[in-house]
Picture 1 (tube, protein in one colour):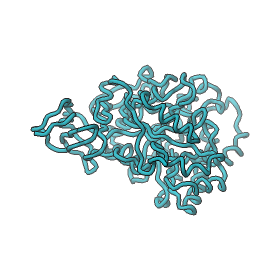
Picture 2: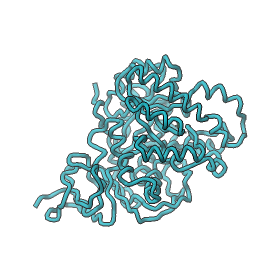
Picture 3: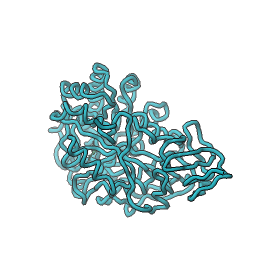
Picture 4: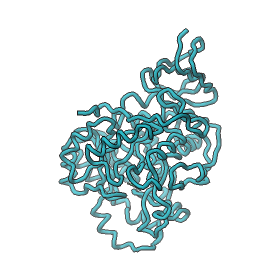
Length: 443
Ligand code: DOR
């Protein structure tokens, strides 16, 4: 008989090689055994019969706004929402106030998350025209998931829009760079055509397909020239998804839950609460996004959780803030897509565990395998539940998905061997740590 700290008994485990009903033994925060553990015992046992056991799900694209305005969001609330929503790790964007663009702020953030984070956290470093020379060193700091470049402007003041500066960024360092890809020149050139108070659906007319496509075409030319790997965040057009298939030597692809779930009818229903960058578009692009999930073009699905105050969302377009909350709702909504037959649970684990691990070079997370961190998301695919605004933990207090009935719900999350969330309750204290990455070890 072998003893473990924890045994998950009899769940349908989403393993890298398929779904198998098996036991999982955990020791010292890591997966110690997969298989039939009937003769073994543990201090803590979880009966997983009737549930699916996924590797801890990762949302690689969140804006936790810390430092910023705690009345809207902060790291503590954002990660608590993540945990209640079934995630065990998030990667946090750098366009805070002030932005995370130097060693001092990065070190501050790493220390700050201890004792506050409810899930593990990877940290982005923001590129600006002033810190290009430092990026090569910054991307190697512990817990850094990637450099983030805003090649088109969005929330905050980070922007690197011209080819010469973008090329200089690509030549500073070697890890995969994450891009917000919209062509800034086209954005600015067309802005005067739109005036305050116009209907919200003009958001997708201003930030049109051409704007996204031009941005991505320029980035791909530069990525090929420099050989620097690129991760194109929130790809939102059929045209880019088609184009990016030709650039798999340098590019990986993220698609957002929103672009897989919402179409332009949302502008009429939700007004400012449908405004995000890049925009929600028409049905043709949603269909292309699902086709790209089906054919493997998409590496990662994220939420782009981007809270703003209700007052900022309710200003007339185009003055309303762009960005939608999502860290707490991405897992239930993706499970609902699984229930509707749009993808399998194995593909979900690929998009939210193995995909982020591969794209960002995570060590020790992203698959159910011996030696990996004992991070698990347990889901009940029979459970039906309606997303309610009162459930949302982010202080801004709203979700564009209020009223959405989901089939499939995360019922437990285990972080490095300890049950951290069970049936809508967080357990214990915030135990989140910085996520480890292969190429970020300090120095
Ligand atoms: O809609 C968005 N909101 N897109 C972004 O790129 C940034 C984000 C934010 O930080 O508000």
